[in-house]
Image 1 (cartoon, helix red, strand yellow):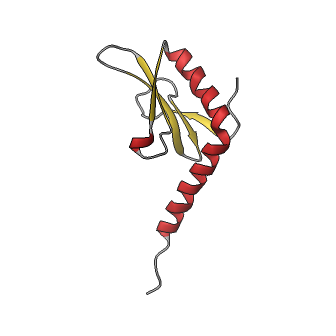
Image 2 (spheres, rainbow, N blue to C red):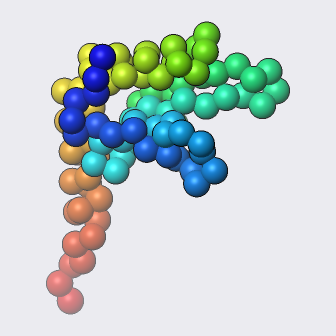
Length: 100
């Protein structure tokens, strides 16, 4: 399965060896990570939303987690586009300063 063209794999940190985050217009929507205590992989979905609305899913392997992230983005792409557009619009409004 292939991601829609406007969603991109990115590296969340400079030390990441491979891309670990899927972004839309610079907003992270999903990220895969590995726990340090038990080395299990997990995915955090809806990363563009506030912390209370993030969803965590555990994965069998890094590769099944990455494939699951792509499937999730494909299934939810319309909602993700709307939510990211709203976030970007709110940020833009915050840049406008009132006339003095």
